[in-house]
Length: 236
Ligand code: HPA
Image (cartoon, rainbow, N blue to C red; front, side, top):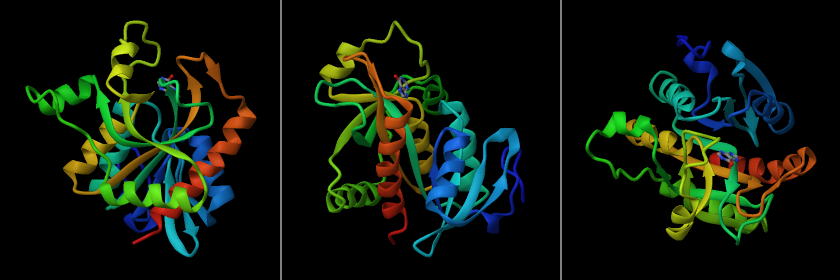
């Protein structure tokens, strides 16, 4: 039963799914981390694959960038394809001195000024999109087992990548670690459908230190993040 954006039968998509923004990252994950991965969709080039990891069926679906785009995929994956555990694997811009390029970060919660949230909640302006606690706890435990230092905290999910007007100092003052563009929507839609969702990131650029990762650096830390996400998503 295909949807407007995902051409697949329900049986072709696993209950456990990783969600990178970038279609080529979805392809990279499928080819390098999953066994027997088969492409199930390429509508709009937002590629989706299903394979296995340590014997457990796992899918990976590109979501595109930003909350309107990930909302479409999250909604269809949960409502039509029955996905139960969804882990976004993406990049973020660090906003805190304590963070460095290549660090891995887990979003415990997401703060947002997104217009999308306003359209969902109307006057309830302070809805708090949060990670699923079980996935969050397991990801933190798995990171420890892997000797992978991770930061866990609040991120800012913004609508505008190029935004000179945003008050970064205020966000930093209230503990926001990093900025990205999808998690508030993912966490909110998971709450709507009673599903488990988590976002894990690597720091690809630093808003305070004005640094950015090279392509090669992105690749290495990306591997740590994917291994952490996969170890976490296959647990019951
Ligand atoms: N802003 C928003 N989203 C991002 C950034 C950023 O600087 N880096 C990675 N994702």
